[in-house]
Image (cartoon, rainbow, N blue to C red; front, side, top):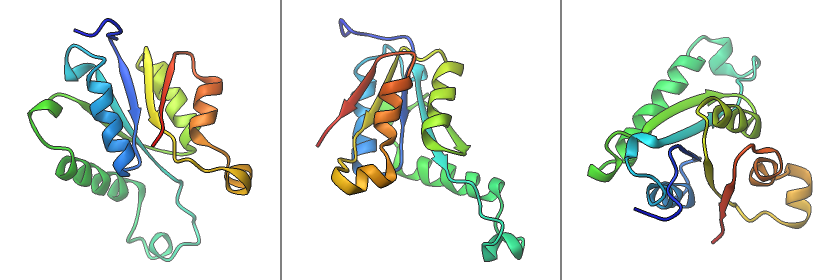
Length: 142
């Protein structure tokens, strides 16, 4: 058991290699994988998108697709029992709300490393999480 072990750890993922590595790092902080909460946030659908207008794409089908991708990509005995959820909305807000809901004691999030103008225009999800989180945040850098 790690000296820094936690009862509830949240890992927001975007399916990048860095976010999958964050899951492995988070597993080191918990006693049991059932204490690990993994969250993927989808953006809201634009009503003008063709799939929405033609009723071929909806939030439920998007969530089911992401859950399928998660279970295909994250496999193995060490991941048995982890909790996965798909939310729809603004990433930083959804992550912070979910962390509060699950009473997370730690958030492990990779930094995408945007800097300069890209960071100014797009903002940084990790930065907002660090700034407004109720619990400690471990930001993993490349």
